[in-house]
Length: 387
Image 1 (cartoon, rainbow, N blue to C red):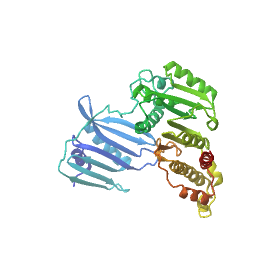
Image 2 (image 1 turned 135 degrees about the horizontal axis):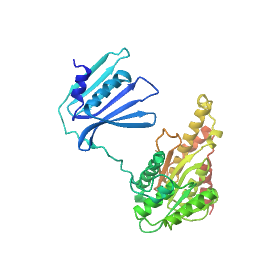
Image 3 (image 1 turned 45 degrees about the vertical axis):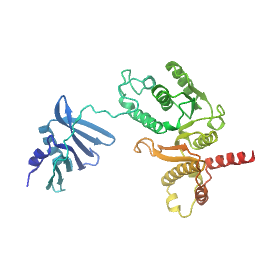
Image 4 (image 1 turned 90 degrees about the vertical axis):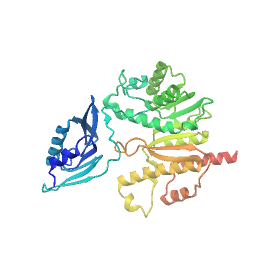
């Protein structure tokens, strides 16, 4: 039986694909360390990526240094080391009493290990290293295009949002002007991103309108749009429920509109027959105040569970109601759930094919809830039938 040093000497070489140190002994410390070979200045070395909470710290080692590093970590901090190689796989297990078990398996080499360059960069829609004026002014990147470390989450969020838009591009016409309305646009990171992506990068003829209740925010956004020469990007002060500035909209975006403001935006989108709806709801209080069900009482008696269940039910009902009005609807994760449990995105694409609303209505009755969106959509239907 090999000792640890002999095993590591055989496992850690140019045939290593990846390895992981896990089963940490300290719950508050580093939870795992991923190891992969990289090519740095023409030489093969090994990058160890240590995960601590939400942070990932990277450090590069030579082969001998890495073997000593793994030995030390198994002796002090971790109880498991798993390695995958082109010709050898193995695992090292350390018991609570310190007994070490090494298991190794040899197999036929199927393909040559591809060692990545050290400067491997994730391919975002908005590229790192390419200066974008609005991202510079909003403090997301510097004038050289480097992402400000404290704003990297915002950079990722913007790119994730643009990926959702990229998916629905086939639904947007290239033969005419496209109207996009962003309700509750706020500081407008994503509004500027939409304009830049669709008009500057993709060449669509877009007219984007941002609407918000904060006059100071609207003034600042308009001044930025003017500075960049974005002649078809406009921001107005106004309420979602009363907005009548346009009669036809191709896409409606509503991000973090609070409570029933989301419902008014969705109802407007349906009224306009918008081809695409992108909505990230927020602060769903309405159902939480109404929900009652004897069978669910053991769950609803706990405030935090009632709040979370109400939020999920609210978004599910919204999605189902949109389907009943002729939309193909998905509920997607907007950004990592570890940041906030409320960042789910409802994406609806108009098909004209309506689903049966009967099951939704039965659920609403069983839970004793009367969502605003259900009322608004039914009112519009009744008005239309009267006319």
